[in-house]
Structures are given as C-alpha cells and as structure tokens.
Length: 162
Image (cartoon, rainbow, N blue to C red; front, side, top):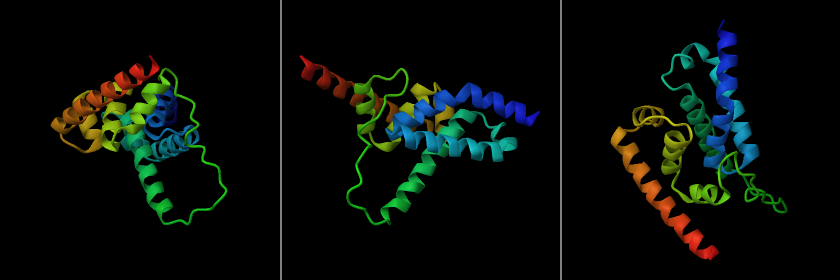
C-alpha cells in the first residue's frame, strides 16, 4: 500500500517539483539530480513525509537544502582549469519564459524559494512558511519584494527589446 501511495505521489508531483527546483537553481542536470535525491529521501521516510501537510514542498525544500550542502562542499574544493562552464546554457523549464527564468535567478535565494513555493507549487502562505521554517509575515514580505523586483526586471528587459 505504501509503495503504491508513493508511486502515485511521484507521478503526480515530479514534474512540478522539477520545474520548481529548476527555476531556483537554473541548471537542468543539477535540478534533476537534486530532485531525484529528494525523492529517494522521501521514499526512505515515506511514513513521515506522506503525512506532511505539503509533501511536494518537502521534496522541493529537501532538494534545495541538498544544493546548499553541495555548494558548501564545493567551496572547499580546488577549481580545475579548462572545464567549460555550462551553467549559463539552460533549457527553460516547461511553461516558464526564459526572460522570467533569468529574472528569477537574480533574486536572493529566499525570495526565489518563496516564489517557487507560492507561485510555481501554488502553496498558500502558511504551507510556504512551514516548508521554509519562517514566519508567515516573512513569506509575505519576501513575496512582495520578489514580485516588485521581477516587475522591475521584466519592464527593463521589455524596454531593452524596443
């Protein structure tokens, strides 16, 4: 029964979670790896995760936390010359405009996370606050600042195209 429940959850949520993480990290391969790892962790703890009020948010948050851990480890590594930088070559996630995706990547991390959970996963303020471990008022403030910054960026980009 648990296996079937998890399988249905995975099928119903994998695309949304991948798009959300991709919007935050900007690298398709990294996003796929992070989401796969998060789903593996969800499966290992499904008895608890399945009862979570927002299991999709749990997967996204776990993926983003894994990325933070990855960056911490990477900062300690020595850079190797001659390796091409492919981070700038990203396929936009389904349904997201490349200009919007670029603007999202310029937001501070917490604002990106709030936009990802509130807008892309369509969580309410309370669920977003729980998923991020912050107050509801903080979610609202980050959302407001992020939307203002995105509007400004998109207006500037639109004026540049004229």
